[in-house]
Image (cartoon, rainbow, N blue to C red; front, side):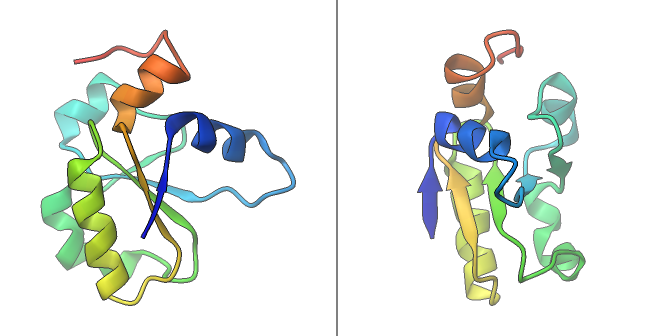
Length: 107
């Protein structure tokens, strides 16, 4: 599994030459409603096993949670399920708020 910091993800997303990844937010709906990275898709961690077929295993996927622990578990699960390009956002949305977008609410 790959690991990426919030500034590295911001750089990737700003690079028009590079295809954007699927930003898979695995937090709970109330957390997503509080704050999220623009363009991210909510799929709570507990729903991943039942919904993994909704994901394209050929796409680059960046897994996101609050601080990076849940997303790391989901990234490992997806890799075991055959997904080839999975990255964990270390520091999660909290890292994004602190390092990239200070206007994002934290909790």
